[in-house]
Amino acid sequence: MPFQPKPATESETESVDVWTFIEGAIGFLSDVTHGGTRLILTFDGQPLGCVVSMEDYARLQQQEEPKGETPNEPNLP
Image (tube, rainbow, N blue to C red; front, side, top):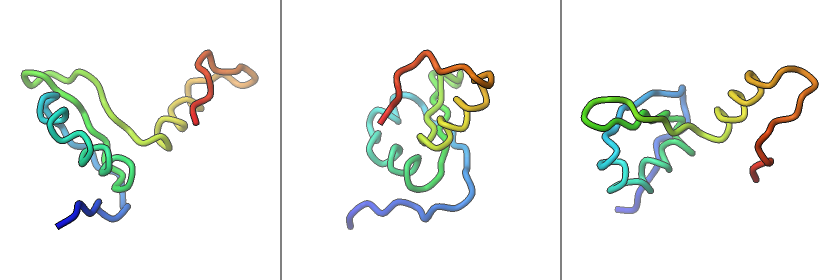
């Protein structure tokens, strides 16, 4: 059966070991993109980083930027 992402609903947070993420990256990224999931990547039970949708990333960027300043990063597609 082909992979079917979860329908977009409220965002949920899921912790995933980094090696598990690497083995199933396509499915996890699809959940982030289409299902609203936010992933916390862990190693030996310790958080390393997170994976969020571009929509969430844009919101975080807007919250960090003081009004009137441009971001230091190039615009992403």
